[in-house]
Image (cartoon, rainbow, N blue to C red; front, side, top):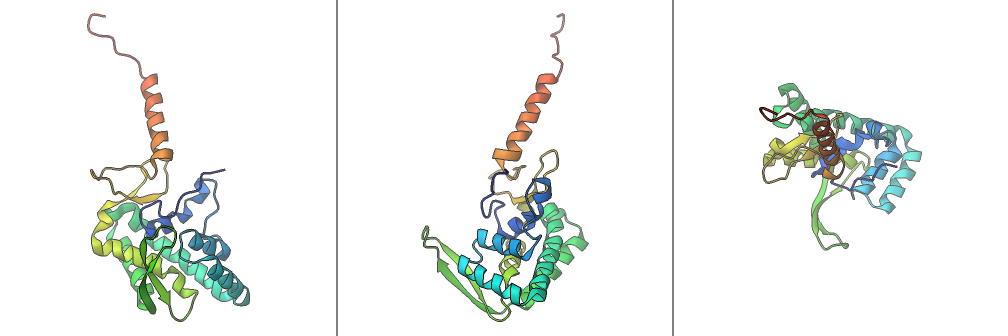
Length: 212
């Protein structure tokens, strides 16, 4: 069984959202394969609690077309954000423009109240968005706001795709001091890369010293 990844393992909410499609190559189900899966992911990263998830599941049974449309939109947004996450500042103008258009489309319809909330588990503070109107449509707003924050604060230059071989689809925010982090997770992809280098060095023929 694959090791569960912690919420915000990628460093930013929107990058974790992009990574929800890593699954087929890592023996895990795509988090957006179903509306229930989408709600489970939202709960895992703290965007909905258990009570709200139950209420949304009940509403999805009553309004299956709305739930299906919400899931379709989440996939559309993820598809628009992935090229931006994979290439960062080197993304094509078209990919960047598409991502910005999607971000602005969602932000343009976001209505509700923004406030600061305290996490009872550790006492930390987080910024929360309490939507007004369509509860389904509001689910993706925090994700899009996270992407917008990355653009506005200039963090995009620190967004990377994992450099592991065979290719790993995960993206992450490089918060290292040197800005040269290559792997999404040192315990998995990083260790595999080091082991591969060790094996390659062990197989390499040894050079004899001159005159040997």
